[in-house]
Image 1: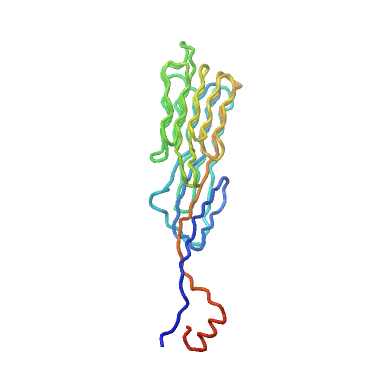
Image 2 (image 1 turned 45 degrees about the horizontal axis):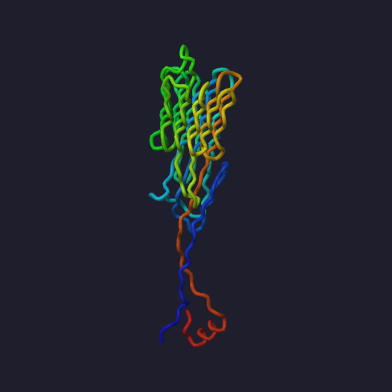
Length: 289
């Protein structure tokens, strides 16, 4: 007589998404063998006393692409990059943002470039905006963002002290040429890794003594006139907005970064559940193993 073996069923495991807004440890689930990620570095700080916008933090993701292999039930360090400090003194440039790192991979995104006061914007994940005069925008890290905006003829004797916008993950920062308008920050990129689309890593608007500029969609701070710059939004990697006019006006600090991990769906097979009376009956009859 054939023997009866417990019935089988397949249980589907739903995806698990973990968002890190501060440094910590990712411990993978016992069934996890691969994952998707979004790793964004801290945004760059903007210049003071009319300064360029900070660049958005470097933006790296594999959502919808090749998944990253990992070990199940294992801890991986996660580091969240801080936003770059703003330029604080008369004519100070901002500071570059800090890198964000996921040890699962590993994956490292580069901090956003600094916004300058009277020189070229700083290189970074996305480049920082140029200071007034005739200067180039900061270069971007390939695959992580876009360049900052440049400036041409935006200083004395024109009296137009305007600066370039910081680059964003989705577009370059706006350049300015003998204009009273500050350069807008480059737009960030949208991700639905958490289920809903959210823009992150936008560039900061370029400072001006004329018409202010918007920060890039994705947490970039706008520029201001005759006031302190606006900081990039925390945990978006947005660049800081440039200050307007002169000291004691300070630039906006960059927004801190974020790391989001999605452990993908998996399956496992388990034996069926039998009542003890049925098990006893089958065992007595020799039909259970």
